[in-house]
Length: 221
Image 1 (cartoon, helix red, strand yellow):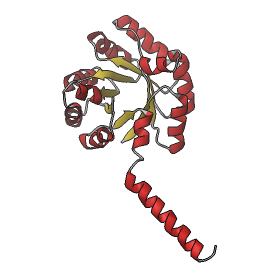
Image 2 (cartoon, one colour; image 1 turned 60 degrees about the vertical axis):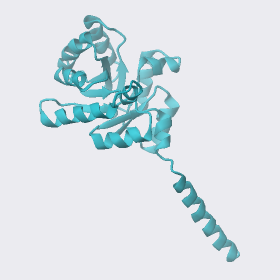
Image 3 (tube, helix red, strand yellow; image 1 turned 135 degrees about the vertical axis):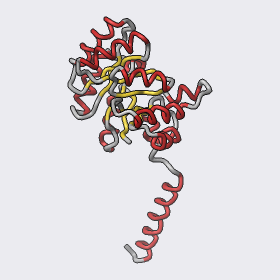
Image 4 (cartoon, rainbow, N blue to C red; image 1 turned 180 degrees about the vertical axis):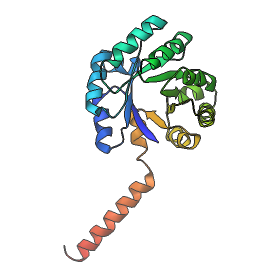
């Protein structure tokens, strides 16, 4: 599984890159606004930071077909590794078809059901982003939709997409994502940090170091 960082914070991205745990970045208007930046400025800096081999998703703000296509072209021109996020609405799906035929990679976002993902896949999306955490919040089983999407991608070779497990909130979401067939998990920085943590690791490390220090003291070193 690949790890994408779901953020527009440069420091967080830099730390994940330093750990070797950032395969790409996803942003959205909320995350960019949280940093107090304009979309284009933030996206370009992120693209430069992560390098051309890591995709960076930048979302359109338009909701009408012509405007979505126009914004998609503008965003694609920002950097060679830009992926355009288009929401799963009728005008968005229509635009996905056009934009994909231009050779622009698409991240179909705000997917909450496998049926929506199927529409995006048929329209030429490169990535399908089911929002697992938000489905769980609404009383649905978010991982069930991931399993269903993974199943139809395996069955039909003409649907050439990758699943981005989006809205991941817990370590369990990440683990279940690997079991359900997601290709990528995009997560906030604090969740990435939690993947390191287990109390037994800290206890074990403290014991190893204490035992070695005790031996050194016995030897008078």
